[in-house]
Image (cartoon, rainbow, N blue to C red):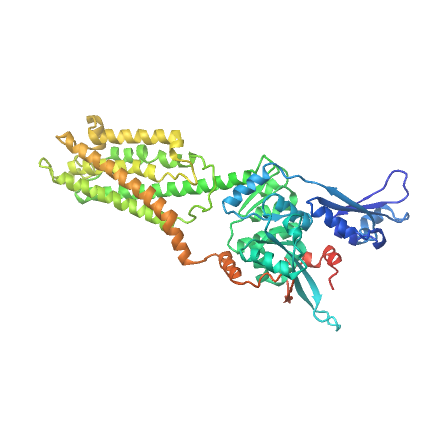
Length: 585
């Protein structure tokens, strides 16, 4: 960033520039840049300091303010006098390391995207736990070089170099120049997957423009992206999304707006500009909110699927009971529909989402598709179990010596008389909605147990007591309202009640222990392993694991340039600051 100012009493305007030290040095006169500039810069950046370069120059006295306004930036920001380095330290916030550890334990990948120096970013990422002490960091640098330097051919090619980043600590003890140390220590660590790719925005953009296959590789293994422009952040998120990742973005500045809007979930740490483009805004200016967002999102997804399964099963078990009644020419009364549709089935799905999220994060995310194996098996099996119970109750009613068959009266089709068989089916059917409200209320590991939701528990207990009362021996007023016909023996009602309780126990064991326990924890992961990788990033990960020659550390990769660019792609690869910094030919 540069400014033009004129001090009081001065006869000329002065240009002041601060920014990336490498860029400021390239814009300054060579005699003003110390010979040990690179060594000093590396000394501070390797320790995690944020370093800015400072430069200035005086404009000729005959230049007026109108002339300054018309001068291009390239003319203002050249021939500067290099003044030195401004060294700043941004200490890690106390919440950063614990938060990143929570994400790492949950197998959630974290990536640092920053505008700071690459060595500063690598050091900070290691300090906060994104890179372990014994992990390897491979710096990737891309340049445009002439195809044939001995001719006048103006064509260029992309040259990508891979080198180990040398940091304080364990990696500082390695002699990265000697091949023996690299082969004996670094290569085994890389073979086990403990290496991270680090690059700057210019390199990222060059690879993005000219080699899409290499772009997918470096993004898949990339952990640190430094000197990134706002559009680079956006392209990085799009690349991660194209690989099949669900991407969340956390930022606090106006330069993060595009990335925050592009990500699947953007979290702004500021109530200023970034909050406009972000769907989530944190009142705390630290990343402690990220696990909370993930936990709440998973809890909401689990609750939504639970409510959906409840409503589907409610519709079909009611349909099954009504069809069985229709078979004999019967039908539920209006009071029965009111009891089932309003009293028993309306409140539970409304309260599904009121249970708080589980306090911890697990590695495995919840099911993302309602048409996948477990949700479908859960719904169909529950419906089948309930129909089986209705059939048992119906057959048990027919076995009773006092049973009176229902006689169809066409004159009273809409208001049929009560019957013993209809009473048997409806009483066990009413318990089905209480069972569904219990077994379809998701709990750990994505939400707390529904017992922690006092309001929901109160509703379930009230419904259970009501259904138990109507099943065993209801008052005449309730019987007439629901169109029930009590039997002459209470033992018969007790048997139906025991059948309903057995239905409760069997359905609970089947859903909680078999489907959500055994199948979810063991069978489905085994099927996924047999199925192999599906997402693009999974296939690429498997390919890289099988390729021991990549990344080619200490060597170059050469790629031909693309002949054409899209209208949105001509940016940093041809900007002034890119060409000056790397002296591309």
